[in-house]
Length: 367
Picture (tube, rainbow, N blue to C red):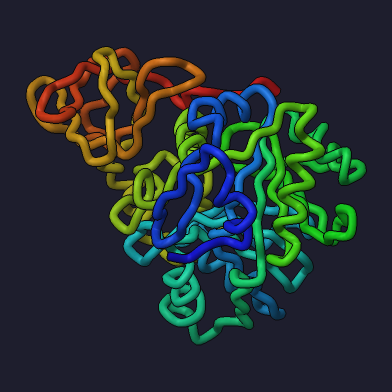
C-alpha cells in the first residue's frame, strides 16, 4: 500500500488505527476515536493528514481557457490568490471528479485532485478529453507535495502563532510562500469539514516537522490529530460530496444538487449540452437528506422505499456526534416531489427502517 510522508510520524501513536483507503494506508482514527475527533473539530480544532490527495500544475497562455472548457464552474474570472470549487464532467454530464482550482498567476494554476482519481484525472486533462489536442503544460507534483488540514473554530488562533495575519485571509483565498519557522508553505483558507480552517501545502520532506509543530502549538487550544472516520462524519453533516457517493461517473452535478457550481451561461464546456438538456427536460433524481426515525446505520447503496416501492438509494450515512442519531443522503426519484417531513423507509439488513426527509446541510457553523 501507498503511504504518505507522515506515516512514520504517526503509525506508532497509541490508539491509532490504520486502514486501507483506496490503496493508501491511512489513519481511520487516533486515540480519541472518531467521535472524540469529530467533536474536537466542531469545538476546538483537528489536524488531518490529507497528503494522499493529488496535485498538478497547469501553466501556459492558454491554461485559463483550457480549464474553462474542462470545468463546470467559471475559471477565467478567478483572481490570482483565489481558489474555486468545481467539477470536471464527461460529455454525458456525469462527473470525472470534483476538484479545487487555485490561480497562482495569470497563466499558472494548481489543481487538487481526489486521491482515488488522480491517475484518471491526469489522463483526462492531458489526453482523454475532447479538446486534449490543445492541452497546455501539465506537471504532476503529487509525489513531492504534502497536504495538512487544520480545521475548527480554534484553527485561526493556532495558525496565528506560526503565520502572521492568517486571519486576514478570506474564505477560498490563499497565500504562497508563507514561512512557518523554516518551512515554506502555501496556506489556503479552505477545508472539508464545514468548519473554518486551513489547508497547508508543503514539500514532503517538511511535512513531519510541520505536523508536529502544529500539534505542539495547538495543544493549549485543544487540537487533536484526526483520521478518515471523523473526516467522513464531518463532511456528511455539512453536506460536502464525496466522489463515488454523491457524485460519480453515473451521477450528474444537477442530480447531486450542485447546480451552483455549474455555470451553464458561461459558454461551452465539456458536458454542458447534456447538463442543459437535463435541466430543460427534467432532472430525474435528487439528493435528499434523511433523518432516521428507527435506529440503524444507513450505508451507501441501501434501498430507499416510499409508499411500497423503491425510489432510490442511500449515498452516504453516519451516526452524528454533533446532532445525535443517524443521518444520511439518498439519491431518489425527483418526480415524487417529496416534502420535508415525508416518511420513507431504508432497507437495513433486510429490515425496513423508518426515516424522514429533512433539510440539509444537517449542520451549519455559526459565522
